[in-house]
Length: 635
Image (cartoon, rainbow, N blue to C red; front, side, top):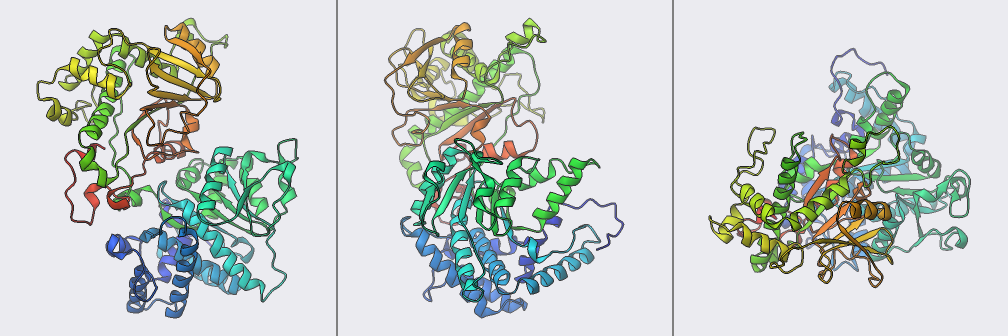
């Protein structure tokens, strides 16, 4: 297809031609046309006819606007979705979809039906749409035509917290339904294995637990045990176990053949040249693939500029995913619909002044303390809004300094690295009582000298809740004592509280943090190089010891109701493999300075919100007639 001459750069949305095709099939210009009506708890669930309320509304819209889809087809798709939902929701005490989840499932039904019924006719329709897109957008999109052999991948670009895992489970059942129907007509159709690919072993365990909750038989792939026997069982594989040639703990990617149903978690991984992209493509080459990520856009845009080979490869990937992303419900839509936590970003402008850096971190800690205090004093009022106990997460780009390099000056070697900087701050905050109290006074009086990009005081009017609780003339010494109690799990009257780091030998990669020798742990560090960090911190005057009698992981129990951990510290490994309803404050040091997958993935770890009645929405976006507690927006 020839490209018209234009100086206009195509937007990312312009290039999502498959998503736009299915919106067009329902005579919709955008997803927001449905959100205006269906983004309400009243529209969720099943009506008296056994169909979803979503279906009833979409059916009326299609008939009114003259959509090409047949009403009988739409009803069958809805019945399939309801049947699969009953299976995966049986152990989940009922499962009701949000409108955007339903639309993703509906589009999948429409796609798989066409794909397995007549792939050539489907391909022709997609190419007719592609030509129409060219005409409408004045040549903004320069994609090659679809071919039948390239229709075996669908991708879902949905915000973290929007239910991608449940969508994955439904996709497995949807695919198997249409595959088995087609196989009755064409016995040569074959799927070797159903494979879930995850970025690490921890996420593999999460997938196994979630699949069990959805009543989908699954097993972890273990090389010494071979393949599971049942054909329909799902195999969960850590991507790091796939290699060109198998070794003791790895397996050759080619041993799985290429006609597999592959479901790829964190699908943005590998799009910058990683071998993982090649491996998963080969696994599904003669089969089918579903991929899921919140950050396809950032990964695909990262290297697309210029005329280098890398840029050309990036543009080819953009075309591939533009033609296979069937659902775009990225974070801007998720947040705009009222889902997930609210946020405010406090960026410290570049400074080498250690006093200002320390004051900034005091402000960060005081912001978190205000959340913990509100959670304590308003516990009863917050209960129906399902707010979890606040958690502060510090994430650094580096853990220990590269002290072995001969090219570094002595001053550079002595610079604190990210995780160490947090620990030295906490130790100083605890030990220097008089100075800390003065810093608290300065931050509360909003006279810090810390200015944001808009020229305003960084913490301007941010502590009204504390001033309401303690009075306008709040005593900083009283607040410091209460911080020791609520944040650091220690007696607020201790003369000289000291930070103590304890290497938890029975749990690899964990260091517990407490004040003094006998208090409860208030924090946990989860990193790889514990020995290097402990050595460096001991040299900086922090108390370090070993703990032989803690057998349970502090990190893995952080979401338990009885967890006393208030601060979690780690490095970039926190961008995936865990999540928590508790995260209320994040401190980022030398990390995610620009737009990209890392920043969004990290924020996604804590953006989830249960919300009033489990609706997942912020209090300001509720459709229920309730009055939220004062200052709930801080939580």
